[in-house]
Amino acid sequence: MGINLRLSSSPSGTRNVYDNSLDFSSFGGSPGASGATNLAAVSSFNTAYAALSGRTRLYVPPGTYNSSAGFNFANTAGIAGSQLVIEAYGVTFTAAGGNVNGVAINAGIVQGADNAKETLIDTVLSGASTVTLKTAGQTSRFSVGQWCCVSGINMQGAGDPPNLGIFEYRKILSIGTGALTFTEPLVNSYKDTWPVYTAGRGGPATVFPMQGFWDQEVEFKGASFTDTGNGTYGKPRVMQWTDCSFATYGPFPTVNNLFRATRCSANGFGGLEVDKCIHRIEFIDCDIRAVDFQSASVNELYVSNHSATNVSGTPRWNGGASLSNIFNGLTIGTGGIFRFGPMNYGAMGPTTMTNVSAPSSERFDVTTPFSDMTEEGGGVLSYAGGPGSPSNTTHYWAVPGTNAVLLDASDGFARSFQVLDVSQSGGRTYVTTNLPDPVPGTINGKSSPWHIAGHPCADLTMVTCTGNLLFTTQSALPAHTPFQSWTL
Image 1 (cartoon, rainbow, N blue to C red):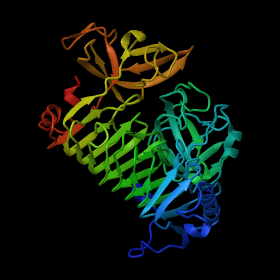
Image 2: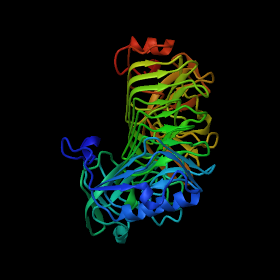
Image 3: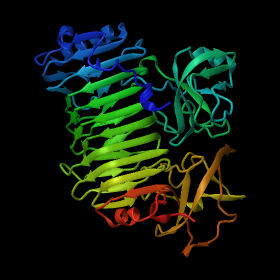
C-alpha cells in the first residue's frame, strides 16, 4: 500500500472541516503568560485532546509564547488514532535554553536495556503476514490494533531509538498462540541469526511495540521556533510541518512512518539531523541550509524544489535513504556541497536526481581498515566485537543486501562487493560477502592495504545536474550507473 494511502483524509471539498475545534487561549495559553502558565496550558490541552476522536483543530492566537521547558503537544498517553492540526500562523514558540520543542516527543519505539520490551521472533520471509515469537507468552506485550516495528540489524549497538538497518511498521490484525498477524504482509525478510550487540536494542529478527500515542497524524502549520538550544522533534506515526520556520536546525525526522516538511525554512548555524527509523521523508519547497543523514535507517526520501541557502554557514546535503532517493530540484547555495552516502551507518540506496545543482560534490570518507578483518574463506570476513570493528566503532557497513567497496590507501576505488549475510559467534561478527577468496593484493590497478566503505550510491541516475564536474559527468552516463562507475 502506498504511503499516502495510509493518511486519513476528509471527503473532497471538506479539507478544513473538523470534528473538534479548540483555542489554545481557552486552556490558559497566552503570549503574555509566564513560561510555567504556557506549559500548563499545553498539558491541559493534551489531556483534553486525549479524550477526543476524529479530526481536531487547535488554533493558537498570534504572538510569542514563552515556556519554562519545551513545548510538547499531543504527548499524552492514551491517544490512539487521533488527527490533529495545530494552526499557529504568526506564532513564535520560545523555550528555555537547551529544552526540546515538538510533538509527541516521548512517543515511539518501546525498548529497554533490560531486554524487557523487545520481542524476538523466528526467521520470517518477505510476504508473510504472521510472525512467531521466540517466547510464546510475550504476546501479552501486544494488543490487536497496535502498531509495531518489525526489524533487524542494529548498526550502532546503542541509541534511542535503535539504529535499525532493516525495518518496517506494521499494525496487528490478530494475536494467536505465540504469534502476531499483521494487516499487511512484510516487505522484508528477517533472520533470527543476525547479531545482538546490546540487549533491548534489537539486531536479530525483532518486533518492537509502538507506544499508543505514536498512532497519530499531526500537522503543525505556520509556527516559528527559536530552536537555538536543541532540536524540534515530532514522533507520531505521521508528522507534517507546513509553513514553519526554525531559527537554527529545523524539524528533525525521527520514528515516523511519514515525515513531511512543506515550505519550511531553517538557515541557522546548526544542521538538521535526520534521526532513525523513518519509513518515508519528504521535503517539499523548503529552504533548509544543512541536512545530515547520520545513517541509512530511513527507507525512502523524496525531495522537491529544495534549496540550501548560505546564511549562517556552509550549505550542504549529506547522505540519503537506504531503499529509494528522489531529488526533483535541489539547489545548494554558494560554497556548498552535496555528499553521497550516510555519515556513519549503512549505505545510500538507488537514487534519481533531476535538476540538482551544487558547487561541489563528493562522498563521505568514512572507512574501516581491511586489516581488522580475518578472511575465513568463501568470502566470509570476521572481526572482533561489533557492531563496528575495533578500528572504527562508529562505522557500520554490513547490512545484508547492500553494497560496499574496497578502497586503497589513497581512497582510490578497487572494486565493489555485496553483503549477503551477517552473524555472530564467540564474540566475533561474521560477514558473508561475494568477495573472492582470498582477496587479491592488487585489483583494477589498485593495491592493498584495503579499506572498506559503504558504497556511496550503487544505483545513480542523474539528469541535467550541474555545478560541479561529478554532477555533469554523471549526468552524461546511462541511468542506474553506480557513483563514478564504482563497480566491476
